Amino acid sequence: MKENPRLIRGMHDLLPEAYHGHQSVIDAALQQAHLAGFQRIDTPIMEESRLFDRGLGASSDIVGKEMYSFTTRGGEEVSLRPEGTASVARAFFSHGLAQSVPLRYFYAGPMFRYERPQKGRLRQFHQFGAELIGASGSLADLEIIALGQEILNTLGVADKTVLHLNTLGSTTDRAAFRDALLAYFSAHKASLSEDSLRRLDTNPMRILDSKAEQDRALLADAPMIDEYLAEASRRRFDQLCTGLQALGIAYVRDHHLVRGLDYYEHTAFEFITDALGAQGTVLGGGCYDRLFEIVGGKPATGVGFAAGIERLSALITAPEMPKADCALIPIGSEAEAFAPVLAQSLRRAGIATVYGFSGKVKARMKQADQSGVAFCVIFGTEELAQDVWKVKDMANGEETLLSTEALQAFLNTKIR
Ligand code: HAM
Image (tube, rainbow, N blue to C red; front, side, top):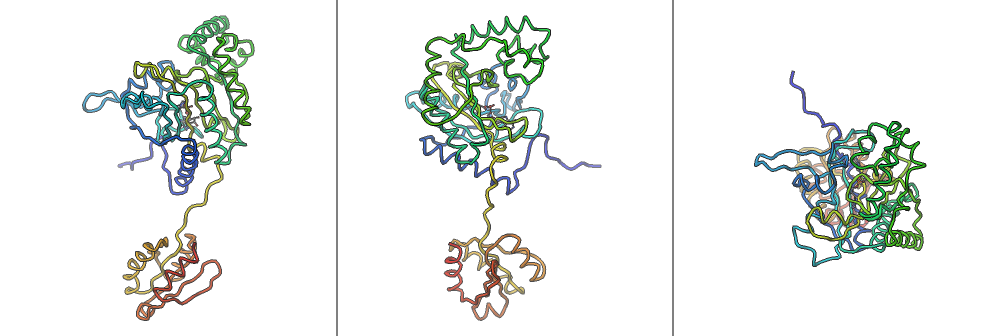
């Protein structure tokens, strides 16, 4: 027997209600982004694989095991984007934008990661993100974190999230820190989880954010980045903390926050909620100056964040779905033939109008009521001939008889 096509594991459909919540998250974020001078851009969902392989780092889980990569018919090695920052950095070079900095970009769209699906973790998910390119230091970091915070405020979820903040130091700071971590965890090899043993060789910093109980037991005595920060790195982080205090943005210093992508340095942050179960990070980012050298061979500076739209949609109070203003209930074939004409003229007057319910008049009235319309226009051959329309107010059952001309004016006053 032939099997019908099914939804692919980890992918999801956005039916109207979910889509509406999703779009309202993007709208709120974009509104705040515009207020802060960020402009919307879009990059392709597919890029050369080497952009991500190099940009996100070979030791990241994403490059190691989560990419949707394939060879095109023309022999190009391409990948579906697992995130947006590398593409933005690539676009910066593709369009020769070095002379136009600082740039403030906002984007939203689908991302793809072959992760193990679970609540809040999908294989196709959506992010919105903001990137500030060509401005560096604590003021740039502050601007980005403040935008993230303001978006969460606007969405009404700020009180459900906590800002976790860390510094990863400069590349030089981190080299010394990495050596210290390597020495420490190597001395405790026997107690490390399998994942962390692998990370010991590739990126020992990632052991710091391991969720495995046996690794966590080792963290209390592990070396801390603060001991390895150069004076300039320490000052940058202190200035950021002072700036956050001035803006009234509360944070916790999280020494174990390292982020899952290799391009970060200095500031790293995540807004985390405990209202969504294990997948609690709703918005995360940091500074990624290194990425530009890797992607374009030339230095530039960048700081930004991305947020999971599905996770935020699950956290917000669902916005009310937009409803039609008016439903047409034609009775008889002549009236039915006229319904599209009347609908067109009402829609052109800005009145959202639906028709096409099926069944007897009573059943159609019920369907119209369930769809949430405010008014029904009921008409048959007689009403057509006499140019009188019976308009029913669905909230109080009141009926009014109106001419075509008066109908539009009546509905327009009532719905505005
Ligand atoms: P990320 O932490 O990998 O960072 O992803 C950002 C957010 O996307 C996460 O905090 C989470 O809300 C959401 N997310 C990630 N993976 C999934 C998934 N499998 N299912 C559902 N939601 C998910 C980045 O992507 C960086 N590009 C952020 C950035 C921008 N850094 C600097 N600029």
